[in-house]
Image (cartoon, rainbow, N blue to C red; front, side, top):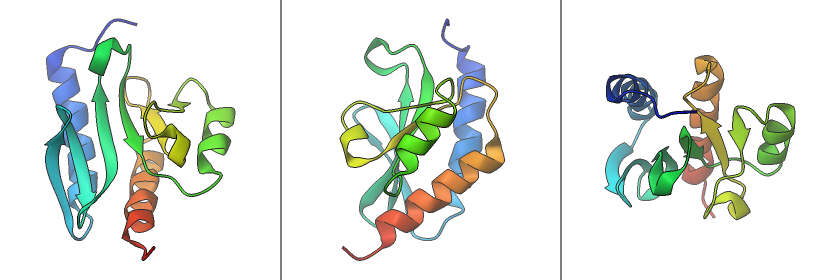
Length: 119
């Protein structure tokens, strides 16, 4: 799949940004050249916009135990195990395919709550 046009990428990122920044105590910063969202000082969502030559425009989202396996098995066209953070249970969600934005919003809210819990 060829990369989305820059205008479409910007629209998708802005839609996701609105979801993330609507949550309390959330900030956005660049990390490793990508938009990253933090709850207090812990990241809960990293963007992957064709980074390092990947063929997808996606978000890597913190996920509770078992969610990664369930999502990847149920819909491997939209969900995947992301590099670097996949071993911690994070899930990759493709945004360059038909996305269920209600589902994405739930994943984001769960990720935000997960990193906000006391360790």
